[in-house]
Structure formats: structure tokens, C-alpha cells
Amino acid sequence: MRFSTRFAPSPTGPLHLGHAYSAILAHDMARAAGGDFLLRIDDIDQSRARPIWEAQIIIDLQWLGLTWDGPPRRQSDHLPAYRAAIDQLGQMGLTYPCHCTRRDIREAANAPQEGGPPPTGPDGLIYPGTCRHRPMAAMGPGDAIRLDMTKAMDMARQTAARGFDETGPAHQGHHPITAQNMIATIGDVVLARPAMGAAYHLSVVIDDAEQAVTHVIRGQDLFAATAIHVLLQALLDLPTPQYHHHHLIRDDTGKRLAKRDDARAIHSYRAEGATPQDIRRMIGL
Image (tube, rainbow, N blue to C red; front, side, top):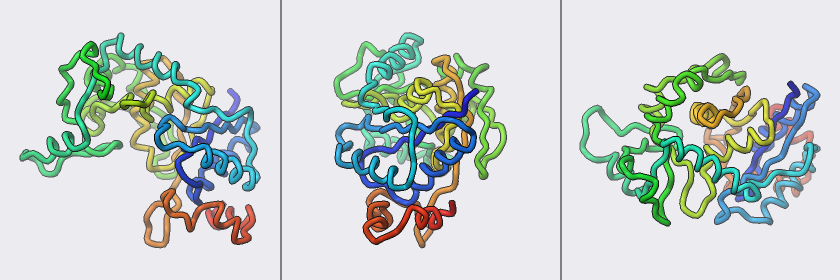
């Protein structure tokens, strides 16, 4: 099997040192294996995506000396594929419409309860299941679409339980997936949001399958979400890649970098006279 990986930035701001680390690491691993390095533009959220940032991403990656195989894939060009996957899960009886706002979820989670603070998962507060009884026929224009985790794990119990292989330094090894863990620590995740073709968890699974990605190389902050992706792969009969979650580049206070931290943006270093080799040294590559 030919090694194939990708770098998938969102065009919602400038690339910073953390992005440079992820992109260079994936690029170097692919080239060392004689494989493919793909570029994907995660512009599914058209309310925040901007052409100017996509253009800046291309410029920054080229300046870093990275090359990719084939043209970039833009999520906004593949909305029908996401919709088909959502429809497939709906036909399996695994989805429901949800009209709860973030405030609704926060208030439900903060209601008096036993057992300490409300549980959180990869997407924040775990959804309490308020709309789980609603059929898809009741879908409204402002509703999100959620996956019924209990039903999903019951349907994919055997295939999803096989889990996934991780080669990243913090979680190296094989990770099985259990229904108890998925229900208690993740809950009913969002598959599509109003005015968006799909949410991250679904779109990344479809994109990786359509691009024949064999190795997913990304930040450690996404490790907890990997079980969601493997479950969706099992439900949709898609292959599961090998995963490698790398450490995050942090600032002097230990906080992970954000796109609003322009002082550590690649274009800022370039304007100050830094070289691509300087960037590699800064991030330990």
C-alpha cells in the first residue's frame, strides 16, 4: 500500500508555527516513505473561510519548501458527498434533528445533578440527548443533525471495536473502541450544522476516504476525536487509516498557538528575514 497523507488547514487565518510543524512533519514522512503528500483546504465553514487566507496558505507552504501531489482538494467542492453520507446514516436510523443551542446545552449540563461537574468530550459539554426522540421528518431549517451514539455503537459494535493503530509518541499502540466509552465520554456528536454541508467529524472521514489517505498525521489535540472518526468509518464501510498524533507547538506560557497569535504567523517570520531552515529549527525539525 502506497503511503499517503495530507495537510488540511482551514482558510480562516494565517498559518503559524504549529501549522508549520504539522505540515512539514507530514510532508517529510510522506517523502521519506516514497509516498504522496496531499493538500486539502477545509473550507466547509463558508461563513469564516476567506480566499485571501487560502492564497496565503499556498504562499506559506511553498515558501517552506513543501510540494504536494495533485491539486488541492476544497471541501466546498464536495458537499454532495457529505450529504450522501448523512442520508446513508439517516436511512440506517442513526440520526436525528436537534434544535438545541449552545446555551441550551450549557444550561442543561449545569442543572443540579449528582456526581460532580458535567462531563465533557472532544466537542465540549456532552450533549444530554434532549432532541433524541425527534424523527428526521421533523427537521427544521435551523436544526443540526446528530448521531445517536447508542444506536450507532450497537450497529457497528463488531467493526468499530477493532479500534485503530496509533504511532504518535503520546498514545502509541492499538486503541480499541467500546460502547461504554463512546456513550459516556463522547455522546451524540453533530454531523451537520445549519448552513453547513457537514461538521468536521463527518467531512474529515469522507475526505480521507475519497483521497485514499493511509496515514493521518495531525495534532495531539485531535486524538480524543479519533474514535468518532473510526466509528463513522465502520458505519459507512470506509477504510481506517493509521493515525499519528504529534505534540503541539506552544507559546512561552505553555498555551497552544492560535491563528489570532499573529506574532508567530509564518508570514511574520518571513517578513522579518527568517528562512525556511530557521522555521525548522524553531519547531524542532
